[in-house]
Image 1 (spheres, rainbow, N blue to C red):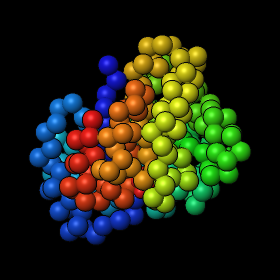
Image 2: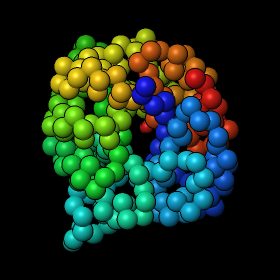
Image 3: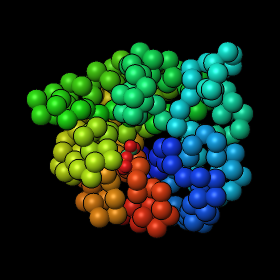
Image 4: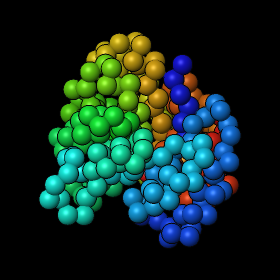
Length: 246
Ligand code: PGA
């Protein structure tokens, strides 16, 4: 059985005391059937690690090298040593604002897997790509060029997050049917590249304006295993309400 997961991507939000307060509001989380993950800014990983309770903890980004002359970057080797378990890769903001390509994302995936970290791999199409009916081809290319070189065993360390770019931070959510259709498509790609076993066991999260009001409907779909949440993850009550929407 694949895991149900609700993950909070805090992006570049919250100051130190707000971050601390949010972790306090979440760390008594005790729902054994849904894993709750948080991705705070790197500055607060140490704080989060010291008081996270049952929460899973991840970084928002790495540079794909263990150490060296990469001013301002953080490495998967450093994260591993701190006991951080997860990292986001391929978020649309890093693709579009920081210009990260599928081949660079592949390097990040490898650097993380080689250090024993789990990857939350984000994929998703732009508004114009959906309008022209190209969403499946776009997502397929993102997966093929950054992820599908992994072995079947390595894929066990990967969670996929489908995030249509037009739905991120815009208030526009994909309909539950649109999400289900893409998740089923991703699962079919996993089955043909790997196996039914990998396809059935890989968690696929939906992201893009997911909030307490729409989470129940999205999570009721067979192939939607949870969410990657931005704005609604910044308050403990809304984040927990989403986690309790299964
Ligand atoms: P949002 O962000 O929930 O604010 O749309 C989701 C994400 O970017 O992961």
